[in-house]
Length: 361
Ligand SMILES: Nc1ncnc2c1ncn2[C@@H]1O[C@H](COP(=O)(O)OP(=O)(O)OP(=O)(O)O)[C@@H](O)[C@H]1O
Image 1 (cartoon, rainbow, N blue to C red):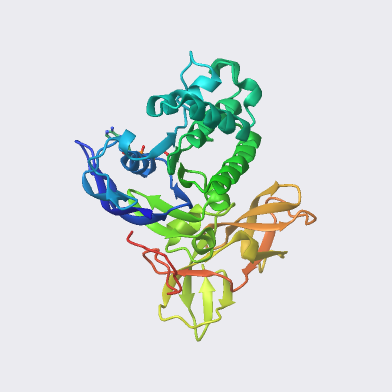
Image 2: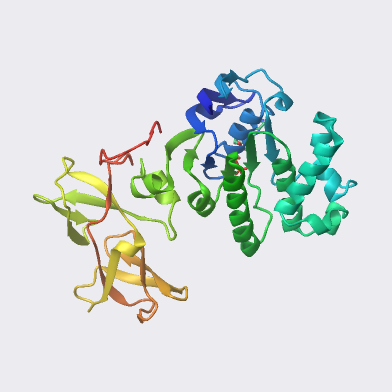
């Protein structure tokens, strides 16, 4: 039992494909996150699963049934939108009950489900208020309660937290995660926020420019990205990508500025390395030997980020302890551990240790 997308594409009347040949399986009961930059096609894909946008090509199957031609109401799913989509003149209780009342005529059951859902999202005491009398977070919870109260097996969410402030977003993230686990919901969740994707997902689909870049667990995506785009999308500050050249054996020269010793020999003579900011080290240097110059230092409490320019061009970020006293314009010597990712000149991962990774970019 699962949701299966097979060669799904979307082309609006004018212009090219906004979803290009997407195939994936979303298992029943899992938290599946679709992530990617603005305009990559996330909402379009979700709306096609919901039945709100027509599919141009391919098939969508929900629990063994091809749903391509089924209207949204027959797909056994609920959807939570960024805008919450609440009825302004209905109370919180009636908003949650609305869809259920339309589908069920057993009033006792409707009452029970709505009461349970409101308790679950801690809104019991707000049941008689109108949406305008609620905060953004509370409105969001009404939308969640509506999804919880419905007996739909699959819940689709489109950037449900993007209107909330940073702290509330973290709190609601935890609440959605806990609810999904408690109810065993199949949750398909769209976001452009890599942290939301990493912290909540069982599996992540990374989209860019209409295409799947990779599908995998958060660990797979972070540790074995299929390409430079995926590597750069996850991690703050982003991974440093630098040109590299094989010297001899396992010795590699990076950006003409420093050398590292890889733990394996690679075939390519010219390639790129990706090194996370916490895998690089910095030391003060006199001008003769410096291979980089500090541009800025960001203080983050327990650590600092040193932004530097390498002497052969290119900018890097390095995470250092907050006790260090690096200053802008200082000359420094940077180096890196050999815990690096390797990419060919087209940006594809060189190592063949991909697990579930699908790279068709
Ligand atoms: N009804 C439409 N007609 C024509 N083009 C559309 C329509 N809806 C969306 N698009 C285009 O399809 C592409 C994908 O849009 P979509 O909303 O799916 O992206 P997204 O990844 O969800 O972006 P965001 O994160 O900004 O919401 C965009 O280039 C958009 O302009």
